Length: 159
Image 1: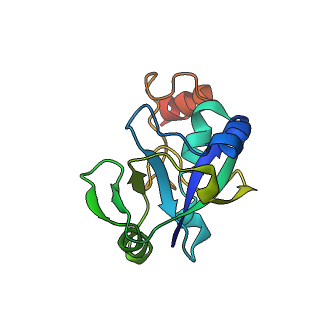
Image 2: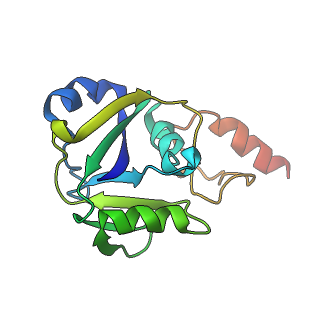
């Protein structure tokens, strides 16, 4: 059985414990990452999810059958259909696995959930996977409503 982690907001904990993980209205699937030896890679989406609303994010760990068909790929590229076991091996073997995601085209039943765990809230990347060490875009559209936006715009004007 392949183990995956789905990142969910703490406010959804009661619903997930009772009903399992519902499919996303956005893409009609459950977003997840394979659990591997590298904690950062498995939980890389945490800061990006937290960036837009600041809520506490939890890790919901679940197991699905190795033969179940899932879609895996980088968030902004075409996804490939493969088994859950192959998806876990691919995401954990890539030279640069940042930005990968696994899409499961069904809800996850509460009986498939292994555990729910509070995570360090500073794990992962923001804006895009290769953004570490680069200044964020200072334009008003990209920084609309973001914490620290005035400072980012001020620093870009000084340069």
